[in-house]
Image (cartoon, rainbow, N blue to C red; front, side, top):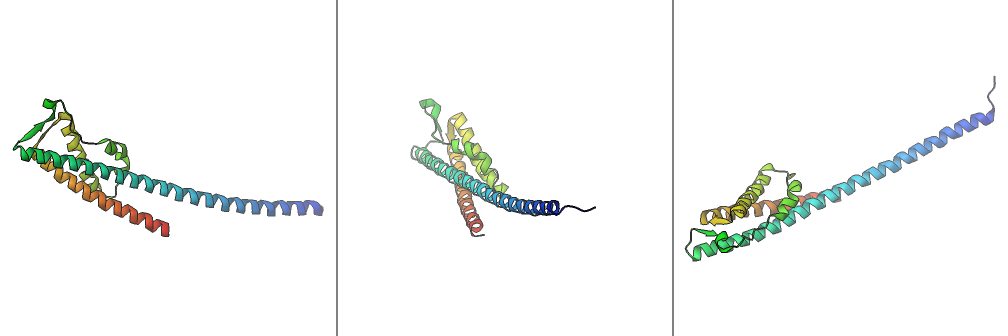
Length: 168
């Protein structure tokens, strides 16, 4: 039994053509996946940096408010300030922390995250009672300064990590 030559050449052509198609598709898909991973990584890094810079700016604002409160308490020789008596609100900001909480929770050091979380927890309590003692002001200033240091270090770390991966 003989197989017609046209059939053999057609089968060989289909196999070779199919092989090239599979190889070309694999290379194309591999490149697309690699590019997608790179884009995802860059987007994640951008989100982290945005969160860090945004929350750091908010921490600095809150530190300035705390410094003003501390100077008022000390200059008037008071033990506390009760903002509700004056129908006023303490002008702390926590919305950026709330917005970027999930991103910052992924910080490489749980201790660093706890430092930030402690600061914002104390701020939230102070906002809710609308009252602050001199001792609480000093504690918040200390925690805020720790948060400032943590965020600066983390900004530096993420920036270096980004540069490393861009160079790779």
